Image 1 (tube, helix red, strand yellow):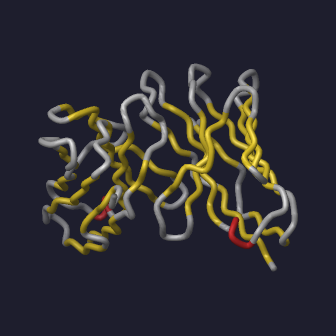
Image 2: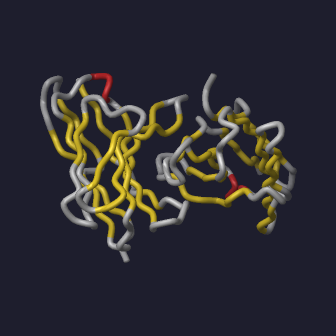
Length: 111
Length: 112
């Protein structure tokens, strides 16, 4: 089983739609969780950290369910500029900064 | 600040050749790491360093060497290139105690 598994993509949604991505992780001792965004042929960039209480940043909401080892990202009112690959990221066991990346979910927002 | 820079952007090697991928950061970050990204597999950690003079292996270290003589630079050496090392390589850095990693633009390597 992969350490971090994400929804298979691609997701193609119209502008203005709400879309949700899911991610599961296998290591129950993981402490830190993130969503990174990667544009085509570019480097990953941090989108947001995921906190136990859930957190929101504008149109983006991230949630963590430790009991189910499940992380989600909700994007409301999708924009064309949201088209990218979204990477679920979890810290590796025993190291706060060794990160394990999911393979990513590709989102295309259509006009 | 330039952030994290990587050179070259593209490289084609023949099997058996060696080369060094360069990575530098000007943010005075203690932590630096190298990842490779292959289709459908996500980024995988090759080597990392928590400070000058200290390096350690990640998930897929075989065939690669690193050194960290200064805080700014963290080169990755391919000892004898193999087609399985065809990939996109990303260097990243972060501050002590921080989790956000800043990535360089990547090096696209093809080994024939």
